[in-house]
Length: 104
Image (tube, rainbow, N blue to C red; front, side, top):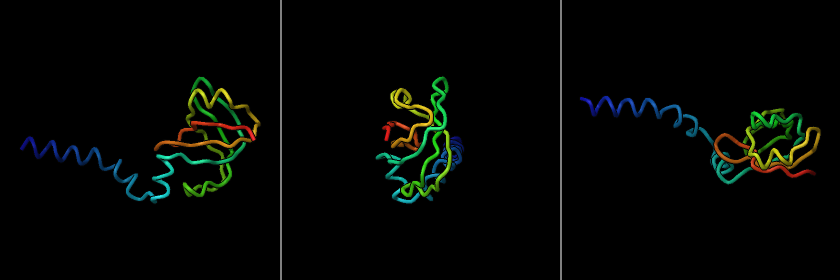
């Protein structure tokens, strides 16, 4: 009985994670692990929070239209970022963290 309860609990806990990836397209799943390049304009930087807000052009690999988003960013990416700058940037991982920023 304890094994059955433990197995049921494990399935219930894992269900949201499985649901998030189940509908993902193969291209989106690959982009999340390999990295996705995009372009945009940096609107603001919050070094203390480790975030950067970017108004980006459409990102077809993720199925995203142009919009303004706040992303978590690596410390190295934040060092290069300047508000108002047009940049090329790389998103990586399941949370689409900004791992690289290159001024254009």
